[in-house]
Image 1: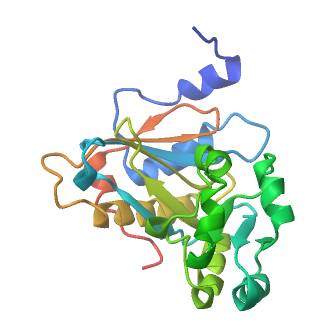
Image 2 (image 1 turned 30 degrees about the vertical axis):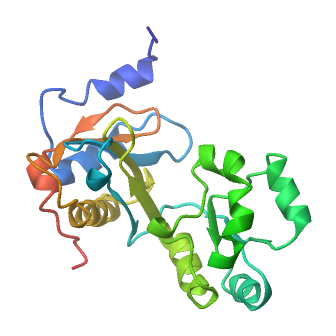
Length: 240
């Protein structure tokens, strides 16, 4: 069993394990209980009342967080010709339009956070599945990362502004970042509200019973904070 240090134990002591906190209480508490010297990421973990084995109960979508993620997002785009030019102009960090770049990725290079592709380049992307797939970097139409050339500027700008993909995993959980501990409590609240609203809208029609069972907010290496699920599902951004 892993042993925790004094800082973690002191932070954990601030959290009532039996209490389900309101979103406003939780975002302030996640800031107060961060123990790292670096700017920790704040994450939301949801236990869903869905069966991931059933195709009609899958949840997968994207949301653009109003206050971003607090980090630089490196974007790679699989495109050629005019689409590649549009991607470059829109701020893509890397363009994969040569065999040299493809071979570099096949060799294990994945120094980017988001990969996108135009439909005509999906044949090339398919060859890289064993490298991109395990890292969650495969472009996917459902995630909006496969787009025609004229849509690339919008998708790239959204990614760099704080576009987050969320999906139900094989254990019926959803995990997503909502910013950094250095964010104000108000900005973390707004980002959490945007994520929760997007997850609610993505509810599959085949979902029966309780859709969201439990929600936990935490920071990197920090203690988990239970959220009141009803309050979290009725959140509205403070900027609205």
